Structure formats: structure tokens, C-alpha cells
Length: 226
Image 1 (cartoon, rainbow, N blue to C red):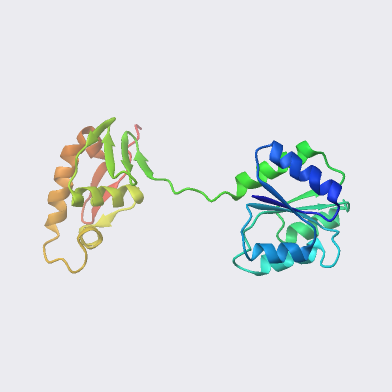
Image 2: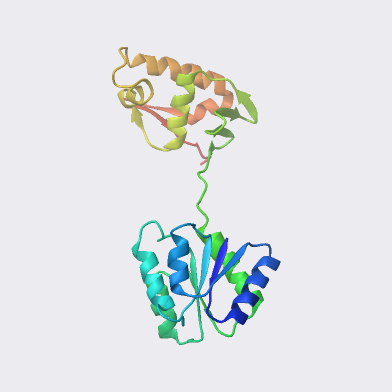
């Protein structure tokens, strides 16, 4: 949902028509009061905010939105007839995501909207951990070596997941033991050695990525030809 806050009904209607023609859902609002009342009830995906509004102007509205944590990350594109560099920098410094100078074309507006929405989309966490031909999918809890799925026990999986999450970092047996089995687990750190050995066997050629650090423990690192 994109909100167009514009007091000129003709401009507002054109903006809404252009956005809806581009496949977006759009809502027109006439004043800053309308915006502040509506945003308490519903969160837009982006606000196209005119600077020159009756009553509370767009710059003040932007300040109010950015001052409140729950509204701070709503993308805002400012629209105004003021095109000086000072005005642009002022709005951008206050937290605007982009700036349109009137008169602007609808194709330009749509392009700016698309660009801001792309930038402001929350990044999805990467669920694939990879080194060489070894892959671990944290979402599906699957491991592949040389393209072949490898069946691991829970502890083997957790050992590999931690090492792949922190490549090129050496961990002592005590550290790995605490991370995978927990500090309250009663056992011996040679348990780590046993699980590393079976893990290497199951991973085949990818098992060589798990290297022993003499006097320390283990590290996952990719060997490069010299």
C-alpha cells in the first residue's frame, strides 16, 4: 500500500492512477492530519509526501514520523516544487529516502518508488552455508557434499553448522564441546574428536575441509593450491 499525501486533488488522482496502473495499491490523503490519523491504524509500504501542505507541512510530518520508532523505517519520498540542492539535502538529512521535484513525470515517480521499495525491503537471512562443494541448508537442516545429500546425527550436524558459520576460525575442543553439548553435559572432550572423525568420513572428500589445529582443536578452511 502506497500513500500519496497531496493537497491538490488533480495531482493526487494522477499519482494514484499511475501507481495502480503499475500494479500497486494506492491511497490518497489530503493533509498531514489525515496522514497522522491514518498511520496510527495502518502501516503503508511507502509514503509519497508533498512538502507544501496546508497546516503541518511535509518536512514537519517527516520529522514526526522519524521521531517515532514504530514509524521510523517507513520509506518516504518527498515531493515538492522546491528544487534547490539545499532543500533536497535538508529532507534527505531528516530521513527522506528520495526526493522528487515538481513537475515530475509519472514514469519517473514509478521508477523512484520501485527503487526505494527495493532498497528498503528487509533482507532475508541467508539459509545456505557453503564452502567449496560442501553446503548446509539451515532451513531444511540438510547437508550436501559434492552434490550428494549426507545423513548426519544431530550432534554431527550442529558441529558442522557451527564450523561452517564461522569459517577460518580455530576452536578448541572445549569450546566446541560447550557449544554443541552444552556446559552442563557430563562427558569428555574426546567426544568431540570422535564426532569429528565420523563427520569427516561421512563428508568424503569434503571432510578434508575440517582441519586439525595441533594443540588447539579444529578449524574449517578451504585449502588453495599454491
